[in-house]
Image (tube, rainbow, N blue to C red; front, side, top):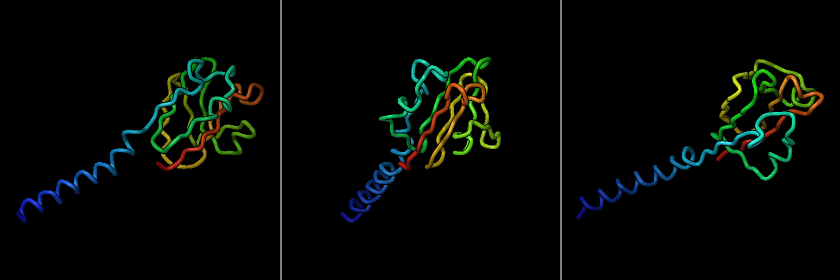
Length: 128
């Protein structure tokens, strides 16, 4: 009987470990920035973000014509002033996937259209 109890404790430990580990990886969402319109200056990105909750591990996919647009990851100042800072990252493939790796504010701009067409998006990622 003691052996059966020990087995139950081991199984329970494994199940609890899986319950704690799996949600962080299995609930990661993929968001296509701008939905069907993609990453372009014709999208109201404030409206696109509204109603969405982003978490660490979620993936942002930027789809765009790379001869017309790009994606720069910037800080709040870069977002507000439309200035690029390559230290945070620049992307130009036209199909960029960026994983939100930390909780906090994330800012992305198109260096061609940020200042006059407001092609930029601010996202807050939360811990899961």
